[in-house]
Image 1 (spheres, helix red, strand yellow):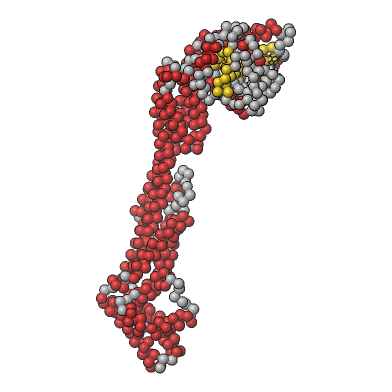
Image 2 (cartoon, protein in one colour):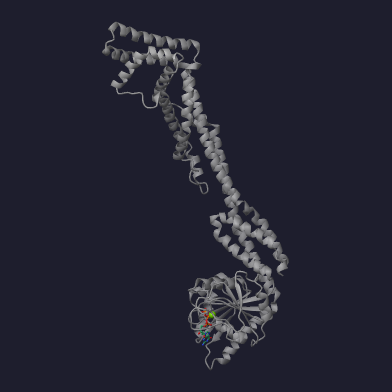
Length: 565
Ligand SMILES: Nc1nc2c(ncn2[C@@H]2O[C@H](COP(=O)(O)OP(=O)(O)OP(=O)(O)O)[C@@H](O)[C@H]2O)c(=O)[nH]1
Ligand SMILES: [Mg+2]
């Protein structure tokens, strides 16, 4: 049987499910599906043999007592100790147990043979499976039946709970043992609702019954909970109750014998039902979750592309550099200073202009103006960057609606948002490049001046020098006169310089600077858009194994149909 186990089909399904673990909202159904898949795999390994009847119930309900009664020997410890059963104990004919001991039956357990019965230690390790052969049962034990005594499903030991649930899920038939004194406990009803509502054969045993009224109440509760199953009352074992106990035992064994006659039909029906349950989980929960997630990622990808595309396509209106009046004036002034420092006659003029420079420096010092640490290029760059930053934040604000859309994208990561703060940070990085460009650009401005303008510019410079020198000579170089002249003439000359240089050149320069700035802005959006796209694509890639889920499930379904046809 094991040779025909379709390992590839199971492996494919397992990895498709593992891929869906990336979806936080799918964690629970994925775990449930993985559990079902493991159970299904075990059933595939032993599709008809043996069939498993699990005796389940809360602590001390009398499960082991009942099992021993069926075995005709005290093989599973039943005692006052609570809880006493610490691992599943499987009873069956020797031939059945032989098949169970192979290791691929319930591979998560360590099968241990126990011919004379089981002895549990104080802390019996979890995940052990005791196999106890029954040699002389007092009734006609069905040849393929493995009867499991399970630990308490409401145990104080969590391993006991887990093993009890695992056995209950694997079983082909369930016997729930309830105790007269504790059948009303919620745990019994929770168990019935969760594990015994899928149509598998179920028998309820009300143990140690001394008051018939308790049996009536138990039946009424079952009806109210919608549980439809036969109830077997097991009387207290008093001297007078002996015959009644024997009758109860006969009833219980008859129920098992009847099921045993169904044989393959029972195991096939349960196998098909288990597969169908997994199919429902895949079709009704997992695939819709995966599709919804994929759709939202694709929508997000489209939104990012559209948004960044929009910014790139129409930056002229949205992100144009309209310099405020004040910034503009100071930009022109800065530019004038740059040009006056970078003309072709710099060497000789510096010498000639020495007195002027001295005058100016003196005057600036007096007026407390100083040239600043970075010189005119730096001022120019600062002005432009300041204006750029304002324009940028304005542009980001104008996209508020689109930003709100982006904010709703799935799991945005740090550094992936389009908030003004983030954009401003990116802009500050890029403005370093802009600064360098400005320094180069302003340096070459003068070189690009038309000849006429160049001549006019130098004429003004010479007039200026002439005036300074003339004043120096006429006043005999009085120190006060220098300062006075420099102070009075400086602004006039500077303005004249600005007038000659500006006009079209300055306008063109400003336009170039604005264009350059727009390019930098576009780069920010392009870059940010790309990062977001990469992130979304990566997420989509992570989900791609989910696409495998449907075909993987179809393949497995086909195998199940073939197996239990
Ligand atoms: N007199 C009488 N005692 C019973 C009956 N069923 C169980 N007992 C006693 O009740 C106690 C608990 O029974 P167990 O069979 O160990 O109960 P259990 O459900 O297996 O308990 P755990 O393995 O701890 O979950 C034992 O001392 C049994 O001897 C019964 O029908 N009549
Ligand atoms: Mg027990």
